[in-house]
Length: 424
Ligand SMILES: NC(=O)C1=CN([C@@H]2O[C@H](COP(=O)(O)OP(=O)(O)OC[C@H]3O[C@@H](n4cnc5c(N)ncnc54)[C@H](OP(=O)(O)O)[C@@H]3O)[C@@H](O)[C@H]2O)C=CC1
Ligand SMILES: O=C1OC[C@@H](O)[C@H](O)[C@H]1O
Image 1 (cartoon, protein in one colour):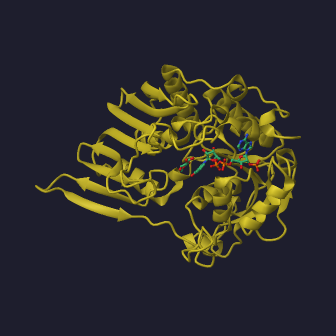
Image 2 (image 1 turned 180 degrees about the horizontal axis):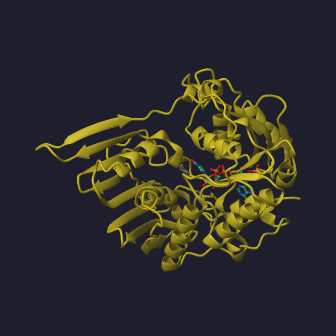
């Protein structure tokens, strides 16, 4: 779909009585899912939830097709497992998926190493793209994606789902409203404790978390969320033109694979008199009670002159924050819960419980849909410019820590026939 050609009636300039708009058919987004791994499954299930469960009436998602680079049968199994309604197509190659005229937007759900080539494959085929985090391996690749999307007038967005959580939006509002005064410091951590008794990590060496061939490591996989919190406060909430940070980093590497397993970043926004401390690790967990437990200690602290916002982890999928304001002798604490709505008509995410589907990825999908509907090439919540500054920050962190990947996955030269694009 070329955004220049297709406009939803809601985007017309002629006067439509606002009372009428509520009766308009929702804008339908036809998704193509590129890859069949863990997050592709979770995202697809979120697309299939009833939007009304999150009070959305203007957007409807359809899973039009899925592709596996392994085999067509894997794509077929994926459709079955995700309970995708009949009619969706299964492909045994990414090339076939991006050529499907029934697909509006491609969700790229491959390992980091593959994002650049896969997203380029889709853009070159004229498809809009929502690409999983980390956007690419380096800033040069991200720049090339952005240039291509701009030139071809296609929508492109890094899938940093956390930014579209109502919780994130509310926290940004607390900050910009001045409730906690001038913010001088943000610290954010996303860490897992995945260590065996012998000091090795629990991930097998080939696992994408630690595999250098898949651009594994704490920084690109987990640290991106610590950076997300620092950036969505200290960068995103700045007035434009925004100041990019100076960076100081320490990286420690996993001796078995060379991937980073303990990375610490200090980001200084000198003119704004503020500093970010972003940490990530696979050795010591953010939450000593264990990953996935509702954290008892805050994983993000946003510290202002008049108070503090604390966000409880896991910070990629937070459901609770508190605002502590000065003023009275004891101070005042307001705890805010932001539960993720589930579709009770669907069986539990694991197929067993009766909680219903809903992981929280639907909000970013709704945003992508609204951008397509409104003819926007990028989302304000995760703009191209901000993705690029974050990629540049991670480049600098890797440079200081001496963390390099292979030429194949660092290359910013697009090659449709690259092994990273699977079979043609
Ligand atoms: N937003 C979020 O909460 C999360 C995001 N992610 C991000 O999603 C992406 C994928 O992660 P995840 O789904 O956990 O990964 P998985 O390993 O579960 O799946 C990756 C998929 O990519 C495809 N693929 C293509 N080439 C390769 C290759 N050489 N090695 C492995 N897989 C390959 C495979 O699908 P096929 O064979 O069908 O082509 C595979 O199933 C990453 O960028 C990660 O950072 C991950 C977890 C959570
Ligand atoms: O994006 C992610 O969020 C959840 C983590 O467990 C996962 O490793 C990461 O890719």
